[in-house]
Image (tube, rainbow, N blue to C red; front, top):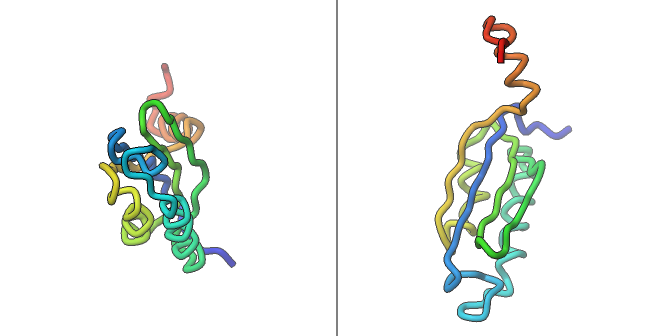
Amino acid sequence: MEEVGDMLFMVTARHTTERCPLGTVQPDPDFATELLNAAAEEKARGQIRILHGYAAAPEHTFWFVVETDSTEALCAFCLPLQRIGTVSFSPVLTIEDQVNWMSRQGESKW
């Protein structure tokens, strides 16, 4: 049984053209494998689940929607991304959960 948790985080990772692991200046053919391995290790421990992942190549930016209750697992997943650039993450809600929360607070008039 997969444990994980119920907190969602939006991870945003940016790097420069010069640090792009798939670019021509400092190519790193092992980067994708390292990132996937970090995610797989935390998933195997029941600590993290990557729900969605997106990339914008021209902007050199990745986004991941991650489910976890462990900041330690989240940081472990982010290590390969931090090696090439900057990483930030924020707790988020789905729009549906946000609307439901606002309804319970009596603030649903928007």
